[in-house]
Length: 175
Image (cartoon, rainbow, N blue to C red; front, side, top):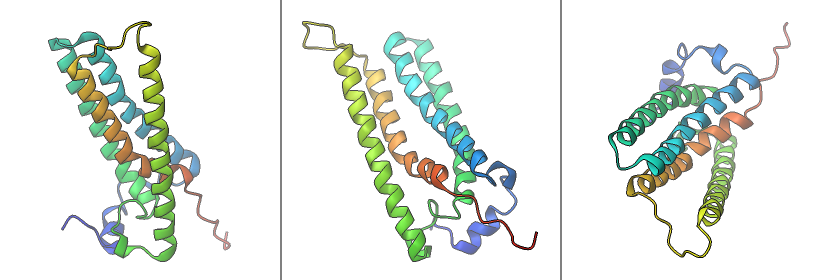
């Protein structure tokens, strides 16, 4: 029910967001940077929870950062779906063979990027462990936000990679 056909996608994204947001590779990469920063807000929220939880400040900061990340990423995702011409947002049955192959490549790259994120996270935890101790004391709120940050990163990574890799359309020969 929530899937869009190519015609619906084109009609929905014809006027908004403006094409100037994603018409060139530089603008798309700027959008990807903003989307990555939105994901970074969730990771920052986990750091805030680590240092301030349990407290009302940690709770409200987490809500504010999570809400800001959500609002920012909704705008970025809608622009990236339009920029990638549905490779990220359309159902598989609405894609042609080239788009389907491109989506599989993007998903494989996103899985590799998530693996790198997990390894970096593990190395960070091991390096943060005090010498001689076998237990790390982390507030539960920080663990929840770390897991949420990891899940959000995993979910949004394909759209960010698609936006980053997308090439500019060829110039019109008439001009």
